[in-house]
Image 1: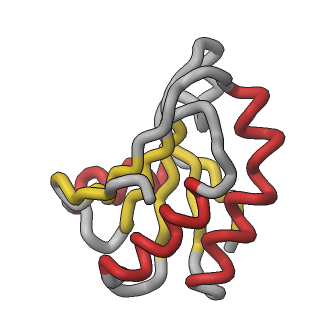
Image 2: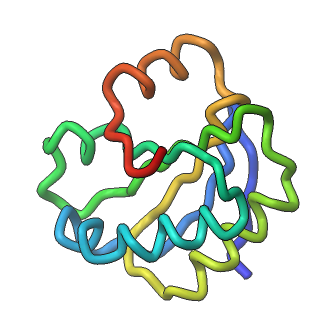
Length: 117
Protein backbone atom coordinates (compact mmCIF):
# COMPACT_ATOMS: atom_id res chain seq x y z
CA UNK A 1 0.00 0.00 0.00
CA UNK A 2 1.19 3.54 -0.76
CA UNK A 3 2.04 5.51 2.36
CA UNK A 4 -0.29 8.36 3.27
CA UNK A 5 0.47 11.21 5.61
CA UNK A 6 -1.25 14.36 6.78
CA UNK A 7 0.31 17.83 6.43
CA UNK A 8 -1.66 21.04 7.01
CA UNK A 9 -4.90 19.10 6.70
CA UNK A 10 -3.76 17.33 3.52
CA UNK A 11 -3.77 13.57 3.30
CA UNK A 12 -1.04 12.96 0.75
CA UNK A 13 -0.78 9.90 -1.46
CA UNK A 14 2.10 9.99 -3.97
CA UNK A 15 2.41 8.13 -7.23
CA UNK A 16 4.97 8.11 -10.02
CA UNK A 17 4.35 11.09 -12.31
CA UNK A 18 3.82 10.78 -16.06
CA UNK A 19 0.56 11.80 -17.68
CA UNK A 20 -1.27 15.10 -17.35
CA UNK A 21 -4.69 16.43 -18.20
CA UNK A 22 -5.61 13.50 -20.50
CA UNK A 23 -5.05 10.97 -17.73
CA UNK A 24 -7.33 12.90 -15.40
CA UNK A 25 -10.14 12.73 -17.94
CA UNK A 26 -9.59 9.01 -18.43
CA UNK A 27 -9.42 8.14 -14.71
CA UNK A 28 -12.05 10.60 -13.44
CA UNK A 29 -14.88 7.99 -13.35
CA UNK A 30 -12.65 5.51 -11.49
CA UNK A 31 -11.57 8.11 -8.93
CA UNK A 32 -15.16 9.21 -8.34
CA UNK A 33 -16.30 5.59 -7.99
CA UNK A 34 -13.58 4.82 -5.44
CA UNK A 35 -14.26 7.87 -3.29
CA UNK A 36 -18.04 7.40 -3.50
CA UNK A 37 -17.74 3.75 -2.44
CA UNK A 38 -16.17 4.91 0.83
CA UNK A 39 -18.09 8.19 1.30
CA UNK A 40 -21.34 7.96 -0.70
CA UNK A 41 -22.63 11.49 -0.12
CA UNK A 42 -19.33 13.35 -0.42
CA UNK A 43 -18.76 16.28 -2.74
CA UNK A 44 -15.55 15.86 -4.75
CA UNK A 45 -13.55 18.81 -6.11
CA UNK A 46 -10.66 18.95 -8.55
CA UNK A 47 -8.53 21.97 -7.69
CA UNK A 48 -5.28 23.82 -8.48
CA UNK A 49 -3.72 23.88 -11.96
CA UNK A 50 -5.91 21.15 -13.42
CA UNK A 51 -9.18 22.77 -12.39
CA UNK A 52 -8.15 26.00 -14.06
CA UNK A 53 -6.94 24.25 -17.22
CA UNK A 54 -3.41 25.52 -16.58
CA UNK A 55 -1.66 22.19 -16.29
CA UNK A 56 -0.55 20.75 -19.61
CA UNK A 57 2.64 19.23 -18.17
CA UNK A 58 2.73 16.11 -16.03
CA UNK A 59 1.52 17.23 -12.66
CA UNK A 60 -0.12 16.04 -9.51
CA UNK A 61 -3.88 15.79 -9.26
CA UNK A 62 -5.45 17.54 -6.29
CA UNK A 63 -8.80 16.20 -5.11
CA UNK A 64 -10.74 17.60 -2.17
CA UNK A 65 -13.41 15.54 -0.45
CA UNK A 66 -16.21 17.24 1.49
CA UNK A 67 -17.99 14.69 3.66
CA UNK A 68 -19.64 17.38 5.78
CA UNK A 69 -17.29 16.45 8.65
CA UNK A 70 -13.66 15.49 9.13
CA UNK A 71 -12.85 12.16 7.52
CA UNK A 72 -11.30 9.44 9.65
CA UNK A 73 -7.73 8.50 8.67
CA UNK A 74 -8.75 4.85 8.16
CA UNK A 75 -11.23 5.94 5.47
CA UNK A 76 -8.58 8.06 3.73
CA UNK A 77 -6.19 5.10 3.91
CA UNK A 78 -8.80 2.84 2.30
CA UNK A 79 -9.45 5.38 -0.48
CA UNK A 80 -5.72 5.71 -1.13
CA UNK A 81 -5.27 1.93 -1.22
CA UNK A 82 -8.03 1.62 -3.81
CA UNK A 83 -6.54 4.44 -5.88
CA UNK A 84 -3.13 2.78 -5.58
CA UNK A 85 -4.63 -0.39 -7.09
CA UNK A 86 -5.30 1.60 -10.28
CA UNK A 87 -1.50 1.82 -10.76
CA UNK A 88 -1.69 5.39 -12.01
CA UNK A 89 1.43 7.13 -13.29
CA UNK A 90 0.95 10.54 -11.69
CA UNK A 91 0.71 12.06 -8.22
CA UNK A 92 -2.63 12.27 -6.43
CA UNK A 93 -3.18 14.43 -3.37
CA UNK A 94 -6.39 13.76 -1.46
CA UNK A 95 -7.55 16.60 0.78
CA UNK A 96 -10.18 16.41 3.50
CA UNK A 97 -11.95 19.73 2.90
CA UNK A 98 -13.10 19.88 6.53
CA UNK A 99 -9.55 19.47 7.86
CA UNK A 100 -7.80 22.24 5.90
CA UNK A 101 -7.47 25.84 6.99
CA UNK A 102 -10.41 28.11 6.20
CA UNK A 103 -8.69 30.18 3.49
CA UNK A 104 -7.78 27.09 1.46
CA UNK A 105 -11.28 25.66 1.92
CA UNK A 106 -12.72 28.89 0.51
CA UNK A 107 -10.34 28.82 -2.46
CA UNK A 108 -11.24 25.21 -3.28
CA UNK A 109 -14.96 25.90 -3.02
CA UNK A 110 -14.68 29.08 -5.11
CA UNK A 111 -12.29 27.92 -7.81
CA UNK A 112 -12.30 24.12 -7.78
CA UNK A 113 -14.23 22.07 -10.30
CA UNK A 114 -17.01 20.02 -8.72
CA UNK A 115 -16.67 16.46 -9.96
CA UNK A 116 -19.53 15.06 -7.91
CA UNK A 117 -22.14 16.49 -5.56
